[in-house]
Amino acid sequence: MTQLVIEGLTKWFGGKAAVDAVSLSIDDGEFVSLLGPSGCGKSTTLQLIAGFEQADAGRILFDGEDVAPLPPERRDLGMVFQSYALFPHMTVAQNLAFGLEMRRVGKVEIRKRVDRALEMVRLSEMADRFPRALSGGQQQRVALGRALIIEPRILLLDEPLANLDAKLRDEMREFIVGLQRRVGITTIFVTHDQSEAMTMSDRVVVMFDGRVAQSGAPREIYERPAGMEVANFIGQANFLPATIVADEGRLMARTVLGVRELLPGTGLEPGGTVSVLIRPEALTLAGADDAGVVQATVDSISYSGNFTLYRVRLPRGEMVNIQAPGPGRQARGDAVGLRLALAPLWPIGIG
Image 1 (tube, one colour):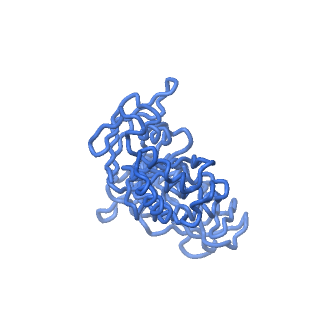
Image 2 (spheres, rainbow, N blue to C red; image 1 turned 90 degrees about the horizontal axis):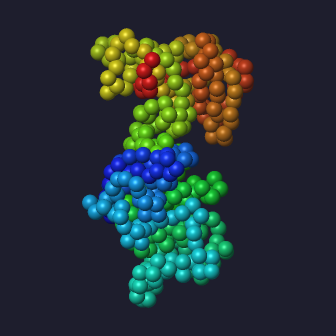
Image 3 (cartoon, one colour; image 1 turned 120 degrees about the vertical axis):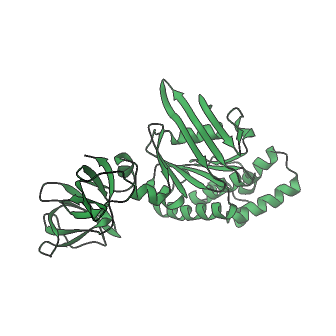
């Protein structure tokens, strides 16, 4: 296992910084996702770590050694591409053996390690098949095995789930995480899919415009985003204005949906105004005439199988999203009541 430290990593393309002074520290055995929209610099960052692109500034340290000047073949990395990049004229076993042959590993050792890799990726019975005879998930497992068989210091995954259908993508998430935990290898996973990053990672690094917007555990990123851009990118988000009041030494936020405590460590003062983040699942629907509810009108409904997303209009015109389990019984135009969970709120912007 290897600790990776990136210091001030920068890459320019055509007068624009694709990666802009990015600094990160990734611990031994940690699974870190680089998450962001297309063009945010996440794949370029991975290419710089791999050595396929050369940095214009900054350092890339593997256990304290700066590998930025080294070519890819001397960085001791395993990489899985979105396209898998398998050799079509080679069998599964031959694809796995290729990297070892290039390193001039002995034939007996190659056979042992290929057998271990086949077992690791659960493809022992398919050793003699060619890639064209494999499903997308099986091809991906071959690519993972080929990356890991050389026993690299770090595993790099560049959107490897993008070409799979939804069900297979879910299955491969579990497979990759389980395999990474068993092997214990430091892993960097690039994705634009927030659900992949949130469910698979020890830590998520959110990037916009070549910079790191926030780095933290998935729960921290979701519950305490660094700003509205991060909050909007990670799941659904509602932002409501609030007035800050004091109550027995606690800071409270007074919103149209009620008064709730603010999460600690915000540095705010009573009397000010703030925008607070309210996730759709923190709101529940009730009858319009129920006690203690805020009245609203259903504006639109999106049914997603296991939950329904409602967009409702509050009395003063604000629109909020509510996530309710199951198909729901409300229809567009219905009068409903809203209740806000008692959990503390996170301030997302001043004013």
